[in-house]
Image 1: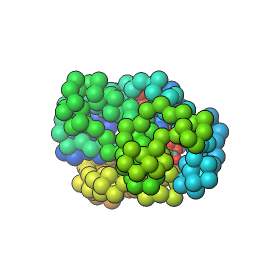
Image 2 (image 1 turned 120 degrees about the vertical axis):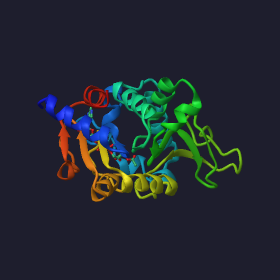
Image 3 (image 1 turned 45 degrees about the vertical axis):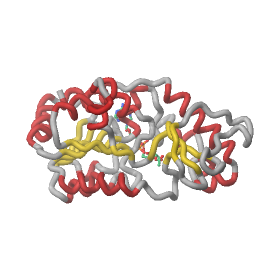
Image 4 (image 1 turned 135 degrees about the vertical axis):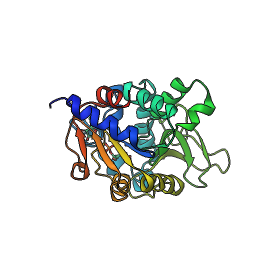
Length: 258
Ligand code: OAD
């Protein structure tokens, strides 16, 4: 892997600075330097665990305790991690200029935590909150009535100890999107509207293998946006990239947004 050249960095900065509207699409790679494993790379979650056993409504129906055990473990692991230089640079940049929509596939809430750290108060932080296409690891939703709550520590030793809904008594589930499920409609609508108006699209740390999320970059490209990819590896979106910056998010993103 060769680092991006100063010319490439300057080109990316220029494209982003001159765009009145920018859509940013992030994936697991933006959180890799925070210590959170990606899904498909070496050591990736889907290399160690079977998504069919853990991240589908059928798996939850079959064995909710097992599914919760895995999510409780992930929740605890991710809670120990901190936003890295890429999350912080994105939050600072969004606060410094209008016209940026951040769309994330991540459920780790690190963009939200970076926004709170950088903004200082909740109102400013809310202005730069990401659109979450795949939900949040830190929220629960009732599997029966859809009532949503903040999620806490989960005792997954038995069915009885799992969280239950305060409204209807049903079993709570992690409020994340599983394979075979629809994405939240409002999030999709807002993300694609932003993509359709974007003059630049910054894609950070995603293989672009999962749709509809990857469609955000395609929609922006079709609308005439310059597509800039930051990723140390190859991605399925490379074919539509105007500029590919090969490198780690925590190193490259602060350079192009600084
Ligand atoms: P993947 O694991 O598919 O891709 C991670 C990407 O991050 C790869 O392109 C890596 O090269 C890149 N990467 C690794 N380290 C990086 C670093 N330090 N800086 C920048 N990039 C780095 O993850 P996603 O594309 O996010 O869905 O996966 C998409 C969806 O698939 C996830 O949201 C999840 C999963 O199944 C759901 O849970 C619904």
